[in-house]
Length: 247
Image (cartoon, rainbow, N blue to C red; front, side):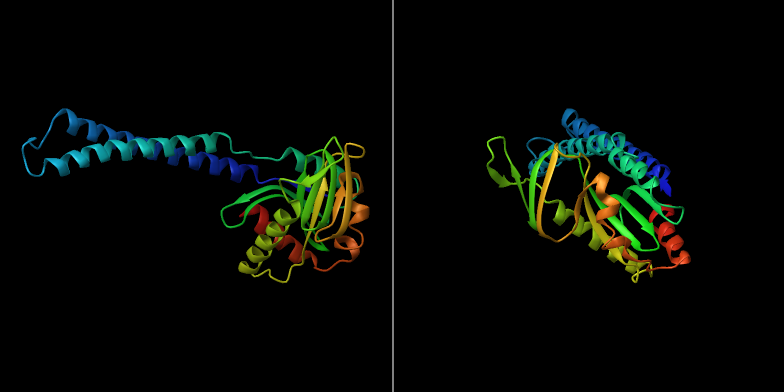
């Protein structure tokens, strides 16, 4: 099995964001400097009828420039912290590589403007399998798209996230994207994978919308759906990988 991540593309995007932050910051600094100059050296006399407009303009320039500088700082922080890989997906890749042959490719840490962020996808003859990887520990109950978590007293309460809704959204985004690149006939499946084993994670499910599993039982649990049969030929597998990884 091939195990890849678009690290170069993500690193390039990080550099592009950093360059954008520098441009926004420089423009913001220039606007602030212009506003300060207009405050220090009034170009309109205070007694003039247009002074109120002038005063509003120079104060607005300082405020707008400062806002741009804050935006630049936020973009710069995002660029510096942009992850080029996903540790959880790497662990999944190590597990899958022990069981799958070269017909399969795991693409980790997909993050694209035209698709959004996806933890990982497996592409092979059965189609595409979208993963939602869960690092949390605890006792969980899933019915449909709803999730409960049990506290130390044994009491149940709604979980603050819904991996089901998240992976369903990822599946739909991927289907829409594949349709846009003329691969709308590629079947797309999903799986919620808990990274910790029992007893750290205990799962109960009733009519789940998307299959859920521990990592160690991912392949056996997917035999009845994703791995049930081959659905696409080699060229379509290769084209799907290219559209998800290389672009």
